[in-house]
Length: 548
Length: 74
Image (cartoon, rainbow over all chains, first blue to last red; front, side, top):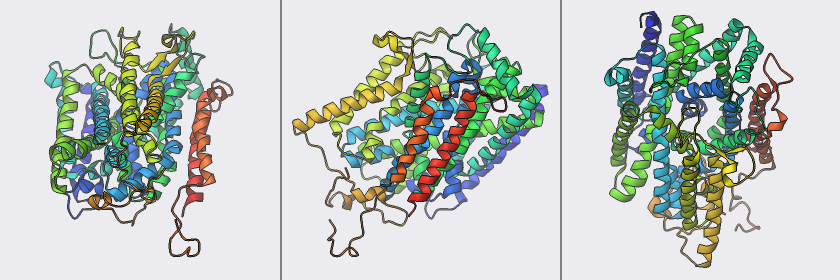
């Protein structure tokens, strides 16, 4: 551990700095009354363009992304670059969707996507399914942020032999995070995101200029990667795609793009914006992070060129490929700058972890607690329940990492991306049309979920000898097609989900099954800053007009 | 519906409709067409075509969303 002292000191100082900021954040843009979910959980719905850019950027491009994507490139090559088309497609795809979601939420005071579904389709059951899907998909994502921190700690030699000693730094880090999130709510990650993203931008810019200079230029780096992949027995690696993994590449990019803004934590970031223009402007400003992610991904190749050997994994005989980028920094940068880089990744884990726990807590409070446990909860009670739930969520995430094989969280996160897609027909399509019947949406969700689980169960991972849940690339041969091509599970299942929803809608309509009352009007989807909020009880009695 | 004789009394219903929105399809479709960019040559500053072309698509995405935002701003 001795030779890492400088790194550890720099890391710790920066970590303490942001922790201090996290506590002070409660007084930043101070609210009149923090005991309200709009304040604690959405930062007062008041963030302008810059804050939103840092907040959503810090929210979507997580520490795990920053270690896992280059690790994927390091291991498989071009297939891991899907993160770039993925993060290109997101913004034009959601441009028109998110402004409608923002408007209707502004008008009705919605805090979660399930709130919207509840009012739009008049179905507590469908809203509950959306809420549970959101919570289940988010939980392992929080645990994965810990894996990001752990990769850095491991590289700095901060490990121990006993269970407690090995995890003590993470437990302390998360305890501090939990405390300031409890106190400051969404303001804490919003303020910390400034530091996190600034550090990340500096580190990446330095890395993509300095490393090729040291390693003989990008051409040499790509050639080294090509040589490694040519020598490997895996037919699907290489610095370009082959005939069999192109369909997977494209469907994974599309499916992941569609999933990202369905995640509750992304929606939390969007709803915290103060008006429609903030959202629109960010759709063209956020790709700056995609550029960064693309450059960072290529550091996986730089790691190949500089001969990085990943550290051993949690179980005997495996390697932890997430340590690839931290090891590269450790090897190539002077100690103090490696410390800054590690802090960037470590702090990078705190911002999304805080927002995710707030989003999961809001879902529980609004769509389970208020809907089923205490219908007459006041705003102050809602805020209090959400604060406590955010603590519980973080304890759960730490427990996942300490007591379970980290691989379990990775598997769950893989599943999470696919199950959150199953809410697309209700949440994303629901913003445009109410044609789909609430019963049809429930049927589609059930079939989509079941099919997702079955397909994921079928996929082995030869690399680590697992028979099930080995990845998201489903061999089309398993459907009976005579081909070696693979396709992204979520892409198939969300289409099946939609098909079932359509068929069930036609049947339910023929049976004259009641469709409930739409609590929103056409104009709600265009409301902007300054338009008055509708009181929920009044809205239920006004004349309804479908916005289809 | 608004009475056509008194257009000032009832403001026109708000809408996000605009022909400019079609531009948003470009950055969604381009990255999906792998045959366009799935090759090594020509390289740019050492980057194989596969990589620099996709970086270029990021700029296409920024350009189209910016144009749509500016031309639909009220």
